[in-house]
Length: 306
Image (cartoon, rainbow, N blue to C red; front, side, top):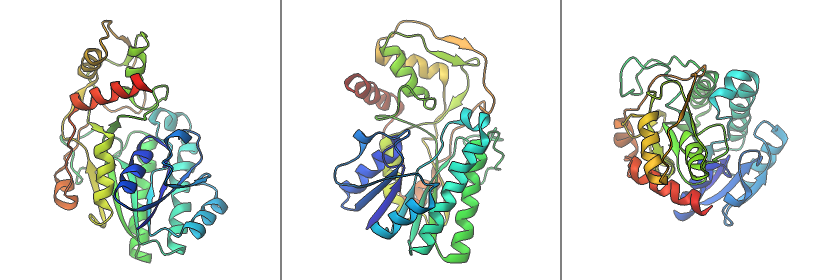
């Protein structure tokens, strides 16, 4: 099928593009290359440079490529930036999403795959692992914007027949993540350790997260092309790991021998989350294949070679 991937030059998006191409699909990428990198673009993919907030550009891409499926990954992804500049977060994540959804409706797209956030939409969990029935009480603007679009997907399905699957990702990491970016503790720590710099840990380091290897995230998108209609699905490992434990694993993988620097915690960060992934197994036939230790080994090897 013809698949348009917004944000397809980014960390997660470019890995998804590779998986779609390997499966024989025709793929186009729409990316403004602000955080995405041109070198991540697969030569076999059609490329359109532009922003999802630009209605004229979006219209041109849909008219030219005529996608059957929209895979929407273009987003503002930094929790801290969303708390500092919630208007920019909403413009990108909500209005940008509406712009591509409107184009999808006009041009007869059959299904939308949407990158949501299992790490942010639930807020401080009442129980763990958090499943899809958990109350939605985000404590950061990023979580609010991601969940808002889930409501729009339901509306567009009810009113216009647009099929969708929303993938609520855990903390995705792996090759191509920016080691100098503001989002992605594994990429950040890996780059700092390999450079001999001393990483900072916010708070006491006991915050727990569910770390998902990017190859597993990409494979979930492949499964969702034909399954999981009308669902919000957690895509995670079901395993929680503290930042302190993560630091120790990365220090071993990088042969780094220094302690971290502890600094005060930040607004919008929850104390702990990991995701129940049983619905993904049932509805998508998906389960994670790469454990954290193996994923960190692959990530460190990639950063060393990059």
